[in-house]
Length: 142
Length: 168
Image 1: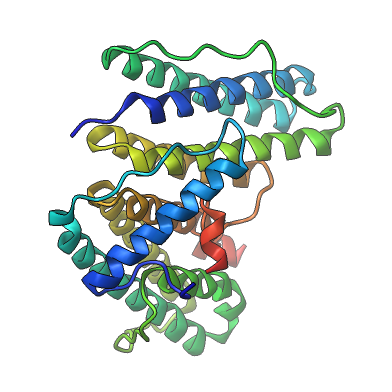
Image 2 (image 1 turned 180 degrees about the horizontal axis):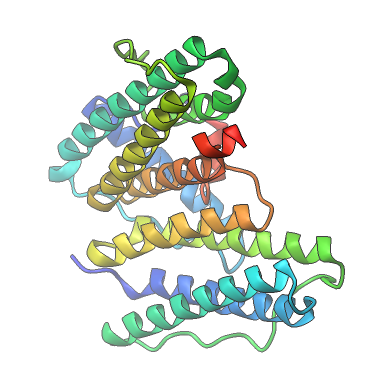
């Protein structure tokens, strides 16, 4: 059984959005600030993950969905708003990778598990609190 | 709807996996581009293996929860620090089983720093076990739940104090 392309496309679409949003936040963050450092690190990671997903889709014979021209993002000119927006990126990315875990197999699933765990850890760097079910918050209500 | 998602018994594990799948679909329809696509059902022949995985991980979580509880009892100064771990373990167990789960009393080191180190080692081992369970589960929804639990443990471990940090 191999991983199907559709869930990988969902994940790459999410990574396109993450890269775009983090790029905007990073560009507005003050130089030499902790926010700039953390966002730059996350940006590079998500860009790498996007490239990995594109390569996997290509290897499976598909064509990765392109990025949208732009994405909805509120005002991130204040430091607190920027931190919160970056945190939201990681929360959404965690949900994307949790769903990819459900739909992927083999090495793709292992990769998705690692990506989910790393998204969760980055939430802490963006001033998030430890979650009991990162990426699957609906489980907490059972 | 039952309180639990996946139980140890094979019958309940199958039903629970279906419930998890329904949840994933509901999340998909409620979300936007981040939402999941349709779920993947586990092949019937592999569901017994998933039930075994759930049983083993339930035991592993209960054992670690017992270590945390015994550590908090023996070293009262750590109780507040360890409370989030207790809440997490309880929530994780509730997803895996609706049966009461008990574990043998744990051997707690005599010094608080050593005890905290033992708890951290146990959480790291639990994270590895949950990760392995996610990687090998036949059921996609079960894999998703276990991966999320592994990430939850990783978050709590990263946020928990280290013995050196506690002393500082």
